[in-house]
Each structure stands twice: as structure tokens, then as C-alpha cells.
Amino acid sequence: MSTPAMKIGPYGGPGGNHWDINALNPPKRLVSIQIWSTASSCEGAGGVINGISFSYLDMAGQLIPSGPWGSQTGKPHVINIGEDERLITVYGTSDGKFVTSLKFVTDRASDPYGPYGAPSTISTFSFQGGSILAFLGRSSEKLNAIGAYKLGV
Image (cartoon, rainbow, N blue to C red):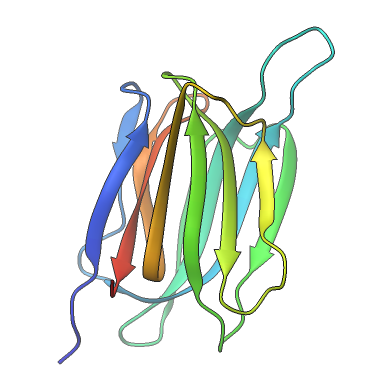
């Protein structure tokens, strides 16, 4: 029998509609993440995470897609997680309304993926330790808040 993943968060702003994975398909391993982001503009507008989608393998080995959550506008970024690779840390920032940046760290890549969007100094958050298997959160036209399912300490 496997240990259930622990929910962390969501962190970010209070708005948006809640989204989550299907409890009937608990995650075993994260396979890929796609982020849509906008960087800071020269006019002073801040960057933001517009949307996210991801896929994971469930306990039966079935590939489960989730999302997109938010919008598919801005620059797309795809992160593929290898079979022997684990997502171990997610760093993020928020302006109090939306998630403004995300950075992903695996146990195999020498450099982190990101940051995507534009970091804000108003609020920072991170999910660290163990293995991150899937995400949950709130979104509207942008990503308002994000949380994770984590296995281990």
C-alpha cells in the first residue's frame, strides 16, 4: 500500500475558481508541466503566470492530463520530467492577486527551470522536500494561487 500524497497550499491571491486533481486518480509521478507566462514590459507592467497545465501518472500507470488552468496566453514553456527524475522544489512569488513567477527544481537538472513570469517582492512561497507529484490551485484569466501534492519530507 502506498503512502498518500500530502496537499500543500494553495499560495498566492485569494481570487479565482478552485481546481484540483480527481481524487479517483491519485498521483504516482509527475510527467510534464506547461506554463504560460508574461514577463515584465518596458511600460512597467509586471509579469505574471497566465496559466498552467500538467500531466501525471496515476497509481495504475495511466497518464492523466490536468488543465489548462488560467489562460493559454503569453509565452509557453514546457518542462518534461524524466522517469528517473523528481520535481523537488517549486519557488514562487505573488503580488497578492496573482502568481507572478514560478521556478522549478528537479533532482537531476543542473539548473532550475525558470523563473517564468517576473518575480515580485510582495509575497514569496516554496514547496520543498520530497517529491512533488501534482498541483492544485485557483485561477481566473490568470493563475491566482497554486499548491502541490507532495510525497515525503
